[in-house]
Length: 600
Image (cartoon, rainbow, N blue to C red; front, side, top):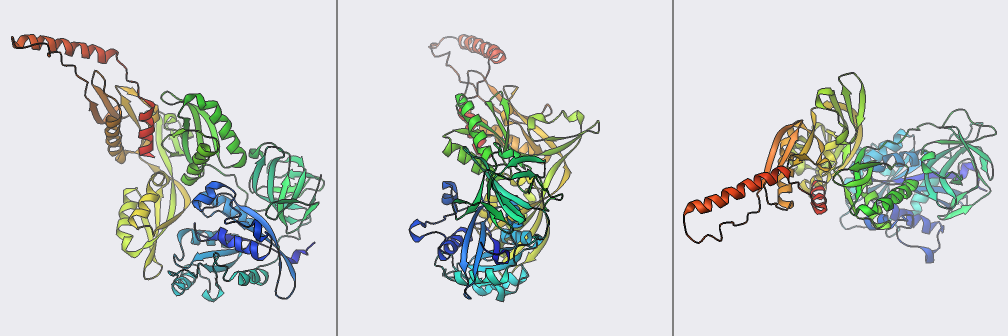
């Protein structure tokens, strides 16, 4: 067993696609944690989706043994963290389980938006940061420029940076030695009672919930009674151990160690990320700092394309929920789409990942409704309610004000794109609060934007106007009052609930016209005219008309008096008028799919 002062707990943080997982592969190779014959690329990314997209979705802890140049044995606990802003809470919990962080910066891309955000997160947690300039062997690497950015933006001396390459293994030895000498030993070990932080969890169908923990003080042993401090829930340790990188059982986990505990609890919702574990015999009184509930930020309805798949979808979202505590769902029905679920996500990427997993792992064809956020509605009675579904918005006469969530976005982009970027931010009802020059080629804009405006196409348009060189990171800001309304689409004077959205009053007409025009293209013609209308509170703001299919009733008239033709046409007109009164328009399922795909 290694002494506590020779344990180093650290994580790797960086912007998306800066080489975190590749570098962790080299560290596993160098410390011989994984044998060469068992090695494969992106070893810690266990999901196919993670490998394909080159992103980390779940954090992956691993324990390594390292003998330093002076012959001393050390125990390293590495946590490979997600880089995307949607998983920022998971990153913050992983950081809380460490004393240090390797901050990776791409030698050709330089400091990006999430590099800065993750560095600030690590600094706020009091971590020691070792900057690593990665991919130095690339032909496009510009080390002097990146070194300058490290000093200017991150306020870290450039000489502290280690030059490395995760692909070729350059600098790996220097990184391991820096972990030994520049990162502190485990903290908060002097607390008199046993305490451990739950920084992640996963579900096993045979063993229940498996908690990923970092022990800060005391010892946790097999069969001991444990207490979850947030809700005082008691359970027992069924198994515990470390990751090397597959789970390896042990008899005890002591101060400074990172590992797992099998609890026997059957629902991941009962285990809260960031919670503190203690022993029931002599429980600690104060929790470890920084615990907060994870709240979904984006909501969307998920419906099966084939209505007979509803039970299959119900089972599938239940299974996904077991491995992702930040995903929430509740049943809802739609007149147009049938039975489905209103689902809550951390962000748009999280929503995309969940939908992709449902399609792949459970073979489901889905329709997703337009994504929305949580609005805060103050009624005329003074009561405040939260609304995430447009159909739940009260009548305008009952509403005093509506507030929407806003964000502070940090956008890194090339200098020449600044004009297009400002135009994009203005179009999305945002404002630019600050412009900072990073170096001679890049700037950083700090903008205030409504969260609802960045949900659908903001990131794609950002990449487009910056020719792929722009990056964005954001933090939640306060709610702000806004002129929001519910827009409904009427087909033949009947509202279609699947197309209802909450939009800003200024944008309602443009969006209404676009939706009506799209529906006109998609809906099949009938024997009578169909009116397509966008309305707000009964007032029509946009309209399109699908013309009727017309039978040529005068085809049998060969010459003769014009009045014969008129008589037949008038008779047809009367028949169409009656048909319009009693006729109904059945919107085909394909129309919903096409409309919702074009608007999300």
